[in-house]
Image (tube, rainbow over all chains, first blue to last red; front, side, top):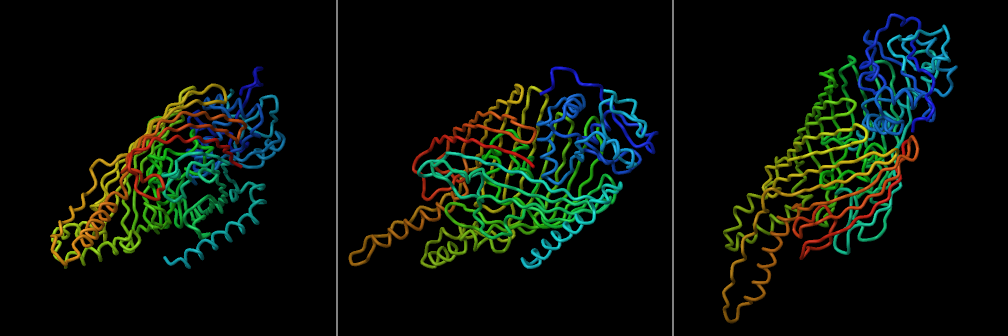
Length: 128
Length: 433
């Protein structure tokens, strides 16, 4: 369930080398829902998710596809256990997420705007 | 491929998967794409269905449960290791442990395949893979991924195999607001099943098929067509050879009507074709799903089947309340065995005994003709409760009306003399890990 208090604003982040990357919302949905896990330049995206219990994750998927975390996980169970796609990597700690995105050219993640630092680039189109 | 070779392929894949795990954890940390994931799914379920005459089973590869609370109908555990070696190559294995008619360890291996992605939109796989006949076929063991306690038996209960060995190639492209994917499959399969109290090793070779899917966040459309040819052992496995021997013997004694029947029992080079269309819709608070399939064979004993279901659910918070109606039927009546000839009463001749044998013989032919007949309808209501992000608790009540002849989705020990109405109560805890 969504928390009653609206969480902080969420931004989608990528590696500095990917600063010029432009994604439509549809492409972001395709990445995070496993329908197309490649960036427009053909590189395989390293998608990063928060812990299943995190409010940030709950808010992100509610905004992205209008589904709760259990619903998204049921969706992923179908893709994962039919061999069609693997879900994003889960990293619990925001500092580690920032570290991973800053060191991996093809990483993509989402975080609370307040956690941002200058080691990563923000995809300006996706401020939830 | 021999069984021995199958096992070699399996162990090769296991070894390669573990080796890649050992080397790739560091690669992931440094920005590479090699990684191995271990995951699994499980159901702890209790169901009470059937009665003293008909045994509840999810499909023909399970044993029946006769009016007792049983964990065997739905409980299972599945484990999976999928490995990406680099941007193009990978492998996966999956094992599912559950109640089965087949008793060998190898039956538990549902996947063991190599994958190659020459481009981002093309995927080729070789090895053992999930049979992808209908919308839920590939994930029917993963209860957490669907709404009900089990896929509707009227639709999925008659499918005797869950995997095949062979090749598939799939291609996907964006189309409109969704993603279109097409898949071609070629291979062979064998699985142990029970039909009309006979243990059968059901083999198909070759099996081929294709399917088309179009998916958005809220809508899924699915079309598939598959053709499975009976292996040369089918006559023996279905006990047709025994029946043919007896028929041929009877024919030599002058029962001339048996000629066309003998021809109708020729199963060599015959096949079954499955064609289906499915639709699913999921926009909170509504969730709907329906499939319809037509299954036909050029083997004269298998009359065409029409199977369909429709399910609608309404979400309230973490609960989804749903109902479903499902039906399976033959669109043509089974063949009729010839009426046994009247043996003339001649003093001193054992006419009565011979008449009894001939009558029994006619009855046996009729039993064989109806051994694959199906006609039943189930009405279901249930609730899915998402307890946690990876756990769901489900309750379901089914009321099934079974035609006395079309009883074969259930395990039975003897012929039914009247139609049945059977209630099934189920409680399942599904989770993924």
